[in-house]
Amino acid sequence: MNDDMNHAMNSQFAPPKAPTLPTLRRTVNLMAPESHARELKALAGDMANDPAINSALAAQAQMVRGLAALEDVRKNKHPASTASQHLAKAQDAYQRLIKANAARSDQARSQIRSRRMSLEAELAQRLGLTVSGDSTEIRQALRSMTSEERGKAVQAAIESRDGAVLAAVFNGRQITTGFTDVQRDSFRRRAEQLHAPELLALRQALDKAEALVCNAFDDLTMMDQDVAGAPSVRTEFERQSTAHDDAMLALARTLDQ
Image 1: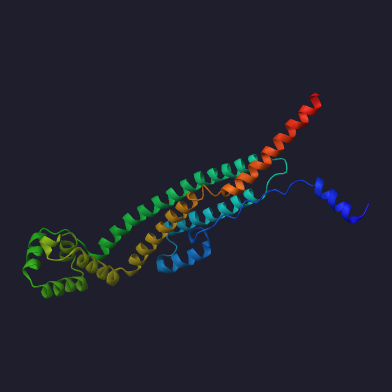
Image 2: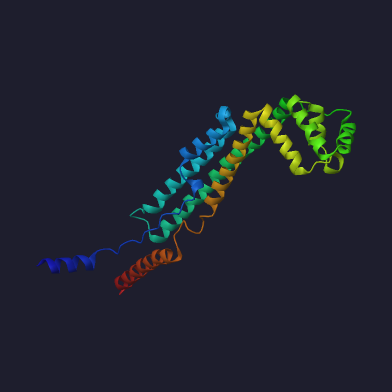
């Protein structure tokens, strides 16, 4: 028997090549946990090891590892599994991945929210913010000034850490203080930068950490339709499964004859 005949016979009796599930497309939120860690910790500065930051980074890293494990499940079909069984296993693995990471991301976000609340209290204390009995008089005095005078008065209060004046401004409305929301926010950031720069940096890092966890989990949930492959891939898996069932049925019929 020559080589051409061997090749023809082998091709005839070789099992059909199994279709391959394409690699899931990852967003930047589901990649490079080490890079995200460096970025967040650099932003947090002296507060880089804050537990809330570490919790968020751990949650994102776990999603990355879980997605890699899911890819292994999708790419490695058990020889004894039918095509439809393999797709079902991949979908089941994905659902378990979502459930586990939903709990982790919720826990990380809860920890961030709690830390943010305590951080706001620390900032208020650092700025010396106190609700004074003369807050109304302070606002009236500010409102009676020119715009330039008001700005200088608040800047002086920031530099001297006059908590009564700052609280009257930060907690007031435009109609009572003469300052717009944008101006008040600007004054507050200036005061925080001057008197509590490390706490301000931590708050910015917490905001970024929360966004990372939320976006990573959202991106994970958006993969639902792709876990079992594109429609054409699923169709090919189903075609092989149907072909197998038809072959088994045909065999059974011949045995019954």
